[in-house]
Image 1 (cartoon, helix red, strand yellow):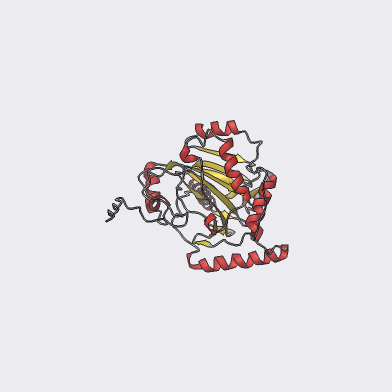
Image 2 (cartoon, rainbow, N blue to C red):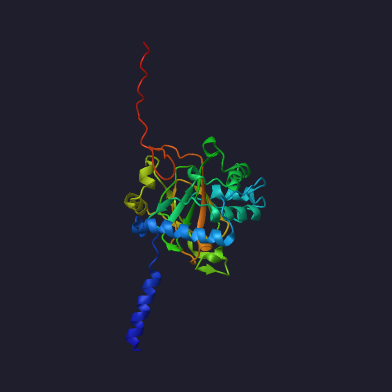
Length: 317
């Protein structure tokens, strides 16, 4: 190989290294949009085969009366870290205790009603559709009780919504958005070794984690602006403000607890094929976001704006 060709290749390699990955570049893309029905059918066939192979043909019910949270977590340090970090965010590894984690994972593998199909390659199971594992109901109370310095105002001290998402082995995952809540807990319950980019030395998955920006949605934006399908306004807003994104690598039983108003998205997913290898994340939203123009019916659709003027009752005659 000639010297000039070697220099050219070296220059190209250096330029490639210098170009940082921009997590905003694939926003608004829906690569699975034309295959939404297939996405659901393929999951359900794989689910049925898994149920037959494991002898589980009834609806999942895992009684759980004991604690769900890992009570060995350093709660005082967690609260300090959350408030001392700008923006407010803290990572909790080994979030659930082992018994609760296994029960929740089994529930999510057995649960049949993954009925909401998304064009970016994942399915959703929501509380309104029967997604009600006992582990999470217990966990919600324990999180609030053990982190009173974070859940420190009335608008933060209630569970407003919870769901789980299950992903194709390779897909872009959830697009950039903010949530209609005060505090978000997002945690991952698929073993790290299922990640095709598993780093054994660090025990993390290089792909499939989460991006969180240091910027929240403006207080006067309504739900459709910070959580709608068209991300043009969001990406422009973040670029104009020079916002920076923090990447949190994937790890089994890792929870990211953060201000729900912060923009965030799933990192591109690359997991091994197979039903049990699918990436599953669970989200629990606490409290309400203030100063919003609309209120979501649930996390799938948005209610119409409430009438600003209430019609007076007719006088009885």
